[in-house]
Image (cartoon, rainbow, N blue to C red; front, side, top):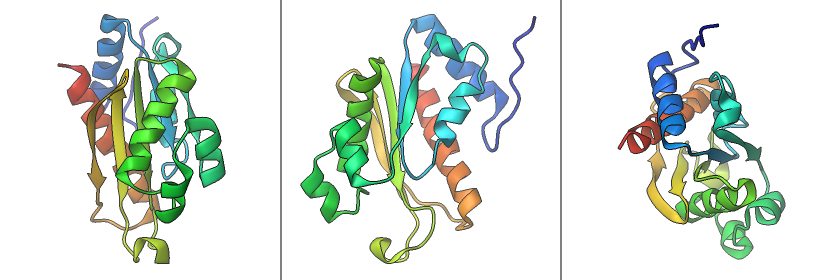
Length: 168
C-alpha cells in the first residue's frame, strides 16, 4: 500500500515527506512541547505515515505548573514572563528531549490572540533542539492576527525551520 501524504493547513505534502525521509534515513526521533499551538504540531507529525517510527510524542502544557512539572522550566523566570520567552521555549524543548528520550525536540510558546500580558501583540518563541544543543530558535510574528490563521502560521513556520535543519 502506498503511503500517501496530503497538504495539511499550510504544510505541503512534499515538506512532510521530506521530514519523514530525513528522520527515517538518520534513524532518529522527534518529540514536541507546545502550548500556544494546542497540539497542532503533534497533529502534523501524527498525520505523516509511519509516524510511530520517528515521532516519540508530545506534550501540550498551558500553565506554569504543568510546564515546570513535566518540562523542567525555571518557574521564577516563567512567572515573570507569563511562560512566554525564548528561554522558556528553549527549556521546553530541552525538557521534551529528556521526557520522551528523543534525538530532536521542537517547542513553541506564545500568544495566539492579543492580551494585556503581551501588550496586545501576537507572537511566539520556538526552539529546535538536537540532544542537548539548540540548533535554531527564534520569534515568530504573524501579520494575520486571526487566531485560527495564527496557529497554522506558527506550525508551518516551525516545521519549515525543522525541515531545513534536518536535511543538512
